[in-house]
Image 1 (cartoon, rainbow over the protein chains, first blue to last red):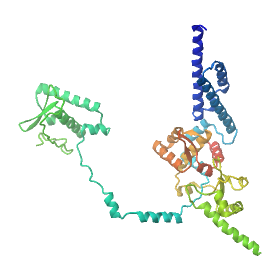
Image 2 (image 1 turned 90 degrees about the horizontal axis):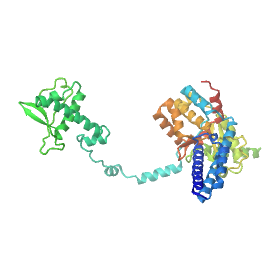
Image 3 (image 1 turned 180 degrees about the horizontal axis):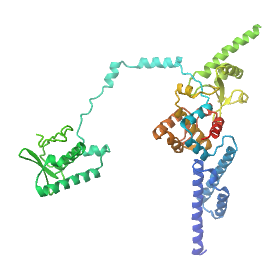
Image 4 (image 1 turned 135 degrees about the vertical axis):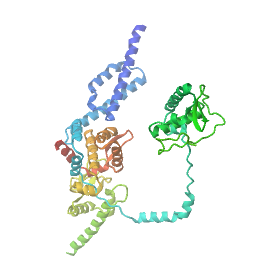
Length: 274
Length: 193
């Protein structure tokens, strides 16, 4: 046999395996009730099996063939049970039923159920065994004092500042968003301080809404911590000055300086909080 | 006469015992298995059960026989006494039906019942098995997603629905014991939108 003759043979076997695997996958989907059993044309599937059967030589191919036949038999069984079911009184067209579910009110659906529902009557009661079990538990139970000692709760953790890591971890903010906002504020500060020199802290931070003011103060604190800007005290006023070349790391010798921003004084924030 | 009197007493004791076995819950499932009744009441347990059924009928209750993996429970007279499956379970159920008000008083909200109707009927139309997501989607249209998820879990927990490892739902033992599926489907088909 020449190479040219061998090639179509190989192609045929490959496509045959592919078709059989597709048949197996479809059968599986039908078994899992994803498709109607009649979605698969059994006649056509058997034709496909017949077409490739004479070419199978390897054991794996014969196994694939056998697996396909087994799956087709199962689909055939499902088709049979569907036909039986459709001829029974329980059969209702699923699409029609879905439309009905959507159009009927909740009350009407509940009433329909009540007309066909015969709930079981049962009584829960204390039995001798249950009493025995309860007594055994009681005997083993430690005193409240003992249990309290064992379950002694530790002191809750002290509140800590919400740094960037904790905000990112809790999903409030992403690092990208934070970096973008920080850069935006820095550029704004640079634009103002490059022209006029150091700017009053409050005039830079203050905005119409309290929320926005706090947000700008929060970002400004990072600008200072990470060396994008510095804070100056000038004639009793706090001033901000952007740095042309940010250090982008925590500068040594930084001093923590709390600045209170209360809601009440938001519209008229004092020029100097100190 | 004396013999008849003895027979009457004999039955009244057995009737009491049978009612205790049927009504008081001992394990996870209500009712009593056929072999339990046979060993506790004796060979004539079927006769006793027939009498229990006749007695309970005055209280709008009935004795039902549920066979393992059976699609629908049978009434006691309904050609059930001839079958010999010792794993079959006998239960006491309501002969008639509840009004919406009575159902509410026994802890069932009408919207929960509506969701159960949709779930059961949809599974029936899919020949007894349907993917959980499909059923949830259908119910969520009316009741919202969160409520649907909670209800579906409750239905599975209470035995109304059964979920397999592939996430497919089928009818649970309680549905086959309590719900007359033919009536349900007929009523749904008859009801105009």
